[in-house]
Image (cartoon, rainbow over all chains, first blue to last red; front, side, top):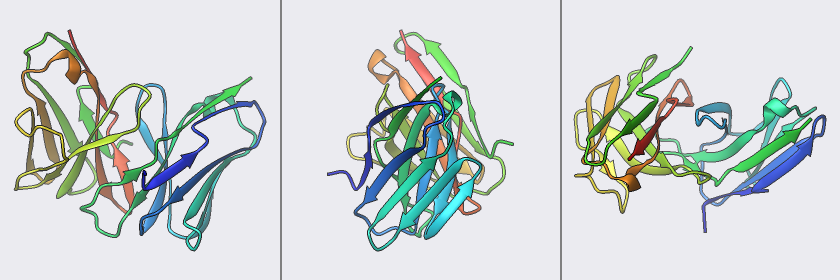
Length: 110
Length: 113
């Protein structure tokens, strides 16, 4: 069983829809990361959070430490949001790698 | 601007060739860098942890003689795929943790003919 589980694996939405991607983790973490990977392969870090909620533009990330659960929300989705969104967990040490979820492939249709 | 610079972005070469991929940390001194491999539509898989001035730590199943890692300075780690074969064709990406965040290179798409 993967230590970081994401759902759904694939998601198709109409432009303008509100989107939620969920992430559950079983490991003890210092932070939870949300990453975005575009078709070209490059990965962008969207959020790193250890508690509460963060917002950047149309993106919102929340985390519940007690329930070991995080969500990424996209408001007013747009075709350019189409990408793979990856949840990853990190420990306190900078020398340990991230533990990745399998990603959610999002397609937003105009 | 980019925090991590990875080169080359794409390599196409013949079977048997050795290919070197560079990963530079531009904004941070990185005692540790991570190398990942990703097959099409699959998740990132950690290959090895590169440690400045010492041997890399390889994940189970990753051949250290096949994938040579050198981390000679605090800003540069290299991954060399030796005697590459078609099954080594993949997307390779490096990562550095710095400034409280995780930063990724743009990746190298390796195609072995």
